[in-house]
Image 1: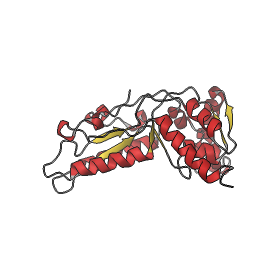
Image 2: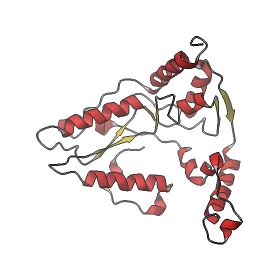
Image 3: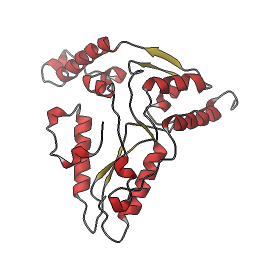
Image 4: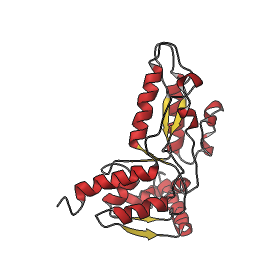
Length: 235
């Protein structure tokens, strides 16, 4: 389970983060929240987990549609997704709370925002795209173990390419292969997040956040918009 309880504990050491990506985000979040004051109220929204809802930009539904498929080992992974509209709604409600006359107790804190309902699997998302998209979607399901081994090799080459001597032997990985490093396998774990804190009223220390849709509804909406723009009917 993922909630905001880590914020009330000391920052873990760098080595306990799965990648620099997570470490730098944690540092930035604490910098923003610690800047909260009566004259400059702050807080942070934590999207959980992957943001979808934009066919032209997101790396969940959008990337499957734009690239006409997916090569994945994550079809059985259960995680929360969150529509970009829910993130925007959370920001607006957080802003409204911070604009109150008295300093609300939500100020200077992070809040998880996610979709309503039970978290789906990545396989649910992949099959939904293949079933409903008017454009072709080809799914290729891969065994994870060989790619985890390859990821370690890519990481070693990337490290070697930055050393004064070995960089002449090992060129820096480029393109998609450069992303295939052990840190990305952190995403291939079952995580269930809760936005219960954000759903509390402002008086109770929350944001008064209320869901509009669940993940399947949000993804179906995105697919309907994609089909309207790229489907056979639009041509």
